[in-house]
Length: 179
Image 1 (cartoon, rainbow, N blue to C red):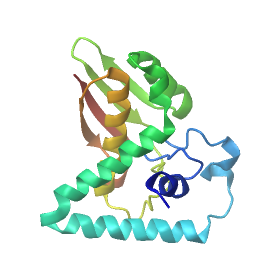
Image 2 (image 1 turned 90 degrees about the vertical axis):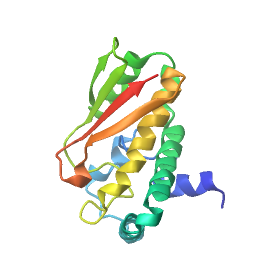
Image 3 (image 1 turned 180 degrees about the vertical axis):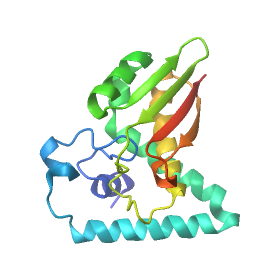
């Protein structure tokens, strides 16, 4: 199985929900439909949490592992492709994520700074076990934001995670500096 096939199967429906929820999934397929979770998915979440914990615990490998996790987030954003419809249009993208996911944002055009605020509630990444997954996994969401805003702006961006649900906050907050 190639990497794309793996990610499609791992994330579900070909559009990973890592940082932003299952954008492409019909409402009836989202977690809130009340269906009992698949035991394989629960086990996969448990194992991902273990893997992330092991990576974070090894100081010699943590920086490299954070980069790998960030790459997973970038791939997730590429699969979702919402940003590809908003090249050069930061405001349009921010309106789209507000409509699709209820994501709040601010855009300081003069300073080239965007703040993205993911609403309160469970982490929307389908690979996260909210009781076990360490905040180190949030490097995935950082990668997602980088990929999305680099595609929109056409240049490199810097992303800082200011708040994280996995680190105990009620919401996730990202500060994005556009080039």
